[in-house]
Figure 1: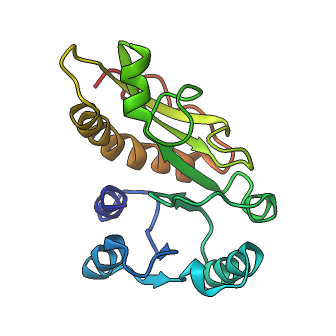
Figure 2 (figure 1 turned 180 degrees about the horizontal axis):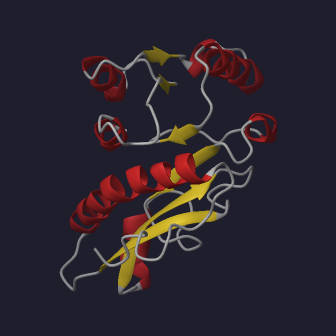
Figure 3 (figure 1 turned 120 degrees about the vertical axis):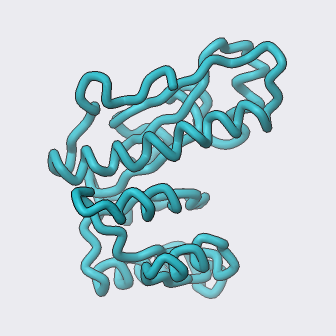
Length: 190
């Protein structure tokens, strides 16, 4: 989120970060957004009787703020097909693995256990299935023999901070539904 806010400060960046919305009132990102002059709203999912009520509140908030494209960053809840359908090809996510490998959680640990030589991150369109949407862009780094989940995770996070702003700019410039950054634009191998 911070990388997106920083990228959007550039006069020629094709997207504005208009709202940060969190389901956790204690999320550090809310404070970070407010400090950067971005409106921040917390909708505590625990205060809603069910997932549908929570997602309806999210939808109302997004509509009230005129949001056109959602970029998930650290939002660790699965969204229902109803909500995802409302944002079809208008909601992107970043995942700390080279999809379709290592969907879900603990990606760095699983990559090391599998013995992969290359690991990275993926920006993809959000679909009802977890981490299954069409890939927009990926970035990769070599796995070092002495890597731990923490050291590998730190390198992948550095890739995420470069890839996500580039992918959001690509989607904002080329229209909703755009997949695949131009050649060289995927930051592969950083």
